[in-house]
Length: 218
Ligand SMILES: [Zn+2]
Image (cartoon, rainbow, N blue to C red; front, side):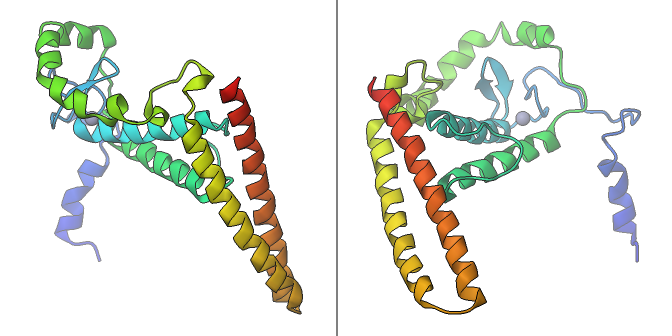
């Protein structure tokens, strides 16, 4: 049954319709993507709110991870070689969904934004410098350095840790394969086939990591 509350909340959910007069538009000082004015700070030379910057950061982290290991770019399926890769893909997809959901109906004109932020650009930089210094991108490990240009920025330690983790995983899969091989019946065969697939995936990932390692050491 539809009650008054449900009916009241309806017009808001139709804000995608561009003919609705209460269309959200950008105002100087607010986020250029969603129009929110909560903890607005510069992000890629544009004012963005805290929620936007957080979600953009999640997507950037995923891109960096996939780029570092030479994995398929974001988008399409979530199919991944291991849980870690899958987690990055799932998080990035969710972040993208949130960003699409909060996007303003009409994005502001880039020139208008530039004009509006120019006078306060100096204060923005001054205000945020302590925050910037504490950001992981500037102090963290090599894996968090944005857009590595040279391959030698790939962190060999990170690669090695990942390889060791995968070798552990491989050992455990081999153990399970031994057990499954002794068992009889259809479920055991299905389990064996699944384990062999897992093993192939781990081996593929190891091969990709080895390639990344060789590229990094050249
Ligand atoms: Zn925003």
